Length: 334
Image (tube, rainbow, N blue to C red):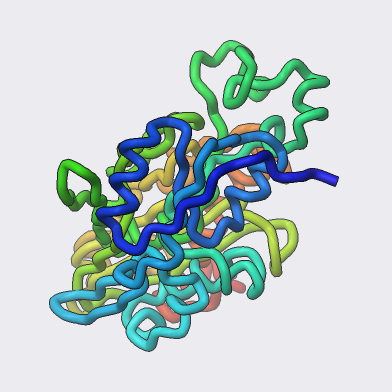
């Protein structure tokens, strides 16, 4: 049986109080909300914080408001996010992404802020302490070698958040609050291409809110995993399109679980601008979207297969937004 290490527990009642505790405790403190990722990691000794600072009881983090867009408190559970009418009706990609995280039990506990800050994952990292010790640990925790790419100077653990690709495609921002004040950045700017230092959030900052601009867009999120009712993504595809009649005015295609950060297929998105969604165009865009997809052998199924499925899932996502059969090719045949 794996047991939690000893830790002190703090339960502040405000964001300011939580930020003050983080600043005072330094590197030995970590935030906890639902704990669905952190607590298993602590049992495996991936993280051993001296102090856990719970933000679960901070009411300000559990609010939803509509204005020029949609503001979501970072402490909202994924279940609460999926139950909000505006999310399902206007921001379909976020609804689909949140609804496919883990199981209903975990979605009832896990928060949207926690999913955005989800630890990167790797076959050689997400094991118990004894297993990792037997291979002499890895670069991400306690070791000096990345066992996925032994010549690599950085950790290549993969970003496995479902909601981040969807929110990036929807042009969302996050609000970070700390002792120095509040700052707002695009969701894409929250991530760095490093499996260890994967967030740009400062240690004394708290992700407090997500702000999605009001826009008339079609969006969708497609997820590849071995078990459709539970697993982390081994590929995520988020697509958001703003239309002028039948032509695409704006487009964003964002890939998840193919790198240490959510990766936008920028060139593929550009190919859509000013064009109608034909099967021929969709095939070209899917080919272009597969180019920045560079999965490694660090998670479930083989990386050549995951690379191949990037093209398939981008095509399916675009066809679903165009109202075409999901598996039709450019010849018009299913």
